[in-house]
Image (cartoon, rainbow, N blue to C red; front, side, top):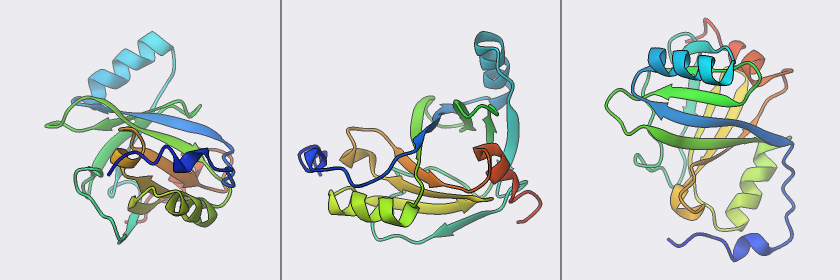
Length: 165
């Protein structure tokens, strides 16, 4: 499918509060945390999704294993300011993984993306964060993620699922 660029020029009804985090695939979470901590002078909090933090997935019409690479126990690290998310993929390709945008109403945002021809490939609830992931083929190669949460920060929202498996 070609990128939905022409459809995206229509009036944008979806509300985006801000860009939340940029996700990067790394082969070694420990090395990446050390590097980015030193270079960007930020600290990271690490989690095991599906281990430390509960993850609930919902089936979607256009599920695509190539577009969504997650396992039952994925290690991630996020800086508390919400700039960078490091995702450990020991046997995967390193590099840009995704860009998250915070929206006030995920259901409304998903409906708008569907109207614009962008396929939803995965939907998760991670702690207190609701997440919708859209197909990179429809968004110029970007794994676009829309998220909604009520907590004061994404980290606080993720921690709402701590200890719930």
